[in-house]
Length: 485
Image 1 (spheres, helix red, strand yellow):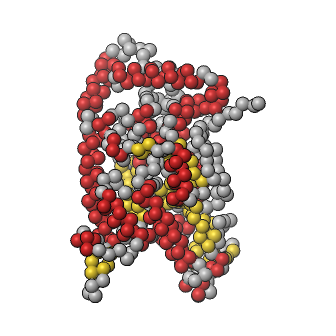
Image 2 (cartoon, rainbow, N blue to C red):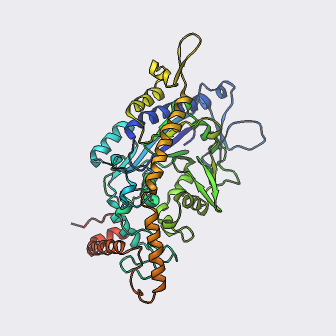
Image 3 (cartoon, rainbow, N blue to C red):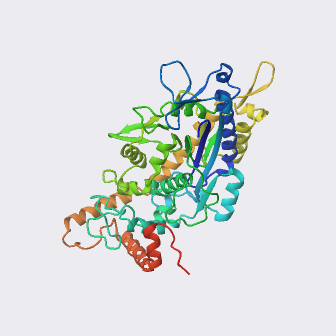
């Protein structure tokens, strides 16, 4: 905490493209630390002018450059005492699935199996520790969803998607609709974005020092004081550019809202915010926040998403659902001003060829890269003296406008495959059931017989597992119960 400006990066989700992107994150962090020290540290213009850093409120950093505004400040700090500390917290799964696949995992045509990877948990964790040097890390298998599901049931979080009322998953009545039917549909895709949100919550809990429900592997790293000023929520496939670094600008923006009457909890910046059909929708690739609002956002995040009656998770785009969540939580948010300049990151999409991958790393980590092939690609040009100059804007735009657009086109076509026929089938089945509701009374309501068959088999499996008393205690409390010797 001030005058040591503390920043946390919370990384979560699947470990996609981490080997191609981790170096850029580390250089990005170092560059932003340098920029912040240059702005507010011992060698800053602020220090040379003999001005002070100002602390507003109990431990909030406010109008950091003191001016004679007549405002009463509680205390001051000298720029010579200013430091920057950055810690990394990681939660990730040990599997990678198809990028942006929001269909059920049972829809095989929506998958690109070449993207799917399964890592050994210990080996992946050790590699991430070596590469990122995180403060705390937890790597888990998505199989933990089976335990989490029972935990959700015991805590009455499984609700009918039409009425919002609690559902007994083992005895679903006619007309009740579950948020999801098969856990496998969640595990091998980003269906409902549920595994994504579970991982984000667990990464936040690592920073907060909170118990993680149904934790299935060991956490490496001891709990630390949760006294951060700024938190960045990101993922492993975000490719940063240290030479475009704008984090210092975002930090200034966030700190300016600390302790103000209109934003009592602080400020959070999202890449995009928009209103769709009366609902606030936000982009979640990465975002930036003060610590208080970051914790407010993640506290029981998944539990809340499962129980919002006005935003049933099965029928709501998760961008809209998160927008609804931040309104219900009392969070203040804005859209970033990064669009006014060139953004300092982009997504490393799966179709970037190996040659371009190497080029990306060279260009984003070394400004002195030269070469005829780069000149042909328009990434470097020669100045009047014949020296090479990197055209990083051209490079970022090439990735964004070429590889990203190509992937989007292929991705959207894959998402449409076999989609129209199931929709027609679903409508037809619902019409039949409505006409014959008395005849099907007492039976479960499913899209088709195959879905019902899967469900019944799954319930049988869960019932057997839930009979164990120790296990019942575990799923009720959300953590393992050790028997007394």
